[in-house]
Structures are given as C-alpha cells and as structure tokens.
Image (tube, rainbow, N blue to C red; front, top):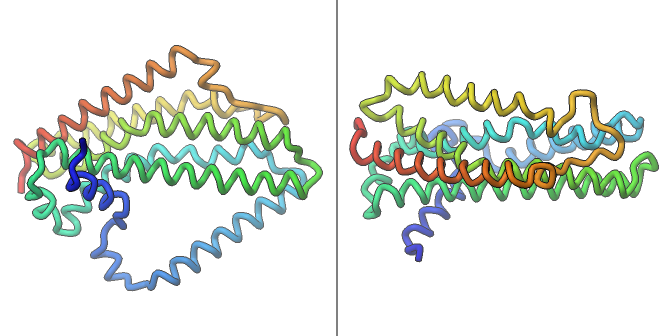
Length: 256
C-alpha cells in the first residue's frame, strides 16, 4: 500500500505550478492570467466557428493540434526535476525520508495524472464544442460528431498509453544535468528527439496526408489488436527501467 507521504508527494507534484521564483518576479495576479486565457479561448472558438459556418472546417483535423502533446509530456517530466534546482528545493526533496525510487515514482505519477487530467479536459471541451456545432450548423451531423469523438479518443488514449516512457525520459534528462555524467546529456537529447521524430513520421496512420474524408474514423486499437498492446506494454516496462535508472543516478551520481 502507498504511504501517506507518497500520496502527499503525488498530490504535491500534481498541483505543482512550476518555477515559483520566476512567477513571483513576474508578479502578474492570477486574475489577469484568467483574463488572458479567456481572451485566447474566445478568439480560438470564434475563429473555429467562423470557418465552421463557412463549411471550411474539417472537424477531425482539429486533433492535429495535439501532435505536440508528447513533447509537452516530456518537458513536464524534465521541468519537474529541473524546478527542484531552480526553486532551490532540491535539498528538501532529497532529504525526505523515503527511498529514491519512491521519490522518483511519486513525481512521475503526479505528472502522469496531470497529463491524464489535461487530456481528459481537452477531450471533453472539444467534444462539447463539436456537439454544439452539430446542433447549430447544418453542415455537421451527429454521425460526424461521433466519428470525431472516436478519432480523438483513439489518438488521445494512445498518448496516455505511451506517455509513461516519455515522462520518465524527461525526468532522466532533468536529473542527468545535475550528475557527474552530465556530458552525456547532449547525446541523449539528440537520441530522444530523433526517436520522437521517428514516431511523428508514422502519424500518417492517424492523420492521413490526403485529408480527412467526411466520415473518417480512426480505429487504431482495433486495426492493430496485437501490435499496440505489445508496444504499450514495452513502453511501461521501459518507463520502469528509466525510473530505476533515474533513482540510481540521484542516489549514486548526483553532483551537488
């Protein structure tokens, strides 16, 4: 069973706001950040609605804006460790009376839950918007909405499934920069970014280059019933190995 300390660490990471020192220097009230967000949100919704009314909006193409989400997951993992040094809280973090593996696992789990919550929120908000379009714009039907939601669910669930390794590698890179073997960091950056780029080269299975047919529906999990579960299982196994390596580096190779 998870200890209360572990649960508190997960909760702390889930609610983490990043570099609080930099936020304090900027000094912008939270209300203004909300105003900025609402302004951007209004502009985006207005623009999409304009093109939808003109019948120029391919609904499934909206999911292409999420292609950068794996990179976001990586930098969330990277930033979670880097921020401990940026905020001068690494001493507090490292002296928590918990094994290094548990400290790393709590941080990883908090980030993964944050990614999961973010993707779920995105899916719900975008799906509700498309459902409203199907009610108000005659060009879009409930069948279009259904295929849109199926495509989004398959794609976002795939991101959730493979994000454990991406987050773990991000954390490893964050720790590596504070160890005695930091010269390896540039090489690993190149290797990881090349690997992520290779993954993006195969996204034509998700987002066809010739565009989206009106009733296009993505069924990755049913199209690859054996390959995808194996890939996901390998992803989680590798994530576990990377987290153990990260904990080892913190325990044995940290350069304070």
